[in-house]
Image (cartoon, rainbow, N blue to C red; front, side, top):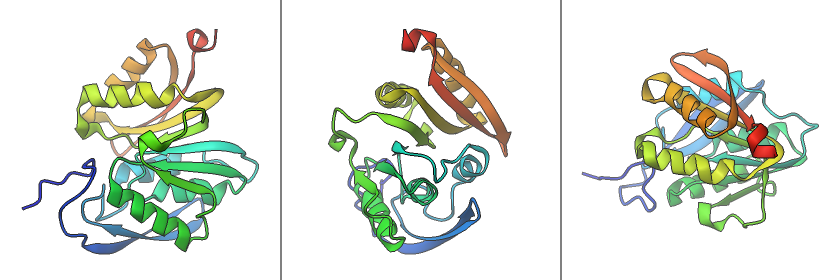
Length: 207
């Protein structure tokens, strides 16, 4: 029996393959998935809510976007499809997830604009105009907070982060924690038990 989790760096269990189909912003997607990667059986409900309720980028969007905890790449592929003039970083600690994201990006003709890498491989000088994440709540509160601190700090001054989190897995407490850290947080939607949070730099973060 495998002890792999979706946040395992090198999954040891068998790479049982499958495919997931979904639509976002009027486009259909058919992506490869595998065991040992987050939500390999279906598009995660939280991700579905995020893609449906947050303000997706458009053809006019430029700059650098981040899919934080990309899994097999559904968010990254949607961002790159909707914003062809932007560069999308897709990062994950899970090597199998990164391989799947790269494969899915290539299959959709997006490989040139989706940069798949491990977190420590992102160049230090890169800042993000948008961060998108269905963060890994099961890593524990301390790890989740460290993750938010690390990557939200790399938002550009006018940047925005879109987060989705289950209300029963700390959605409201994360909102409060971010506010206490001087981020400007708006709950823009609530659906199927998930909170969609829009996070920008507060006054203390820009002074």
